[in-house]
Length: 115
Image (cartoon, rainbow, N blue to C red):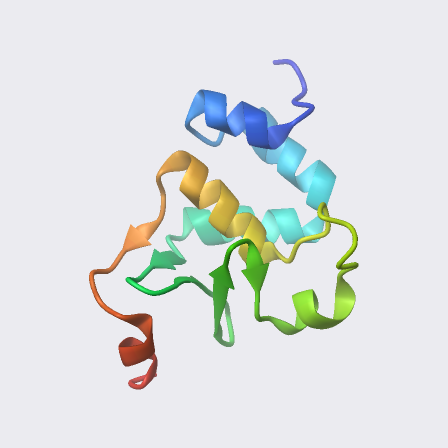
């Protein structure tokens, strides 16, 4: 199989996460890409009425308009470089592209009160 240059375009065209596309995600994003793929595979990208949430190992992270509220996004990424994204935001992109978002017909703000 041919290597993938632009994983976003390739995944939009394929509608699924193939091996070469997954490799391209990891090539571009390293460990963040690997963690994003794992989260998608484990069904940890959840859409509520108000937010998209990625369930991490220690907390849940709100991703809104491609921006995440995690410490990695806040402190480690170059805000001037759009290719630098935390794994939560990458996971939302991948899950959206392949239809792997777990939809919940409720408000996250209400669910969060119980966590």
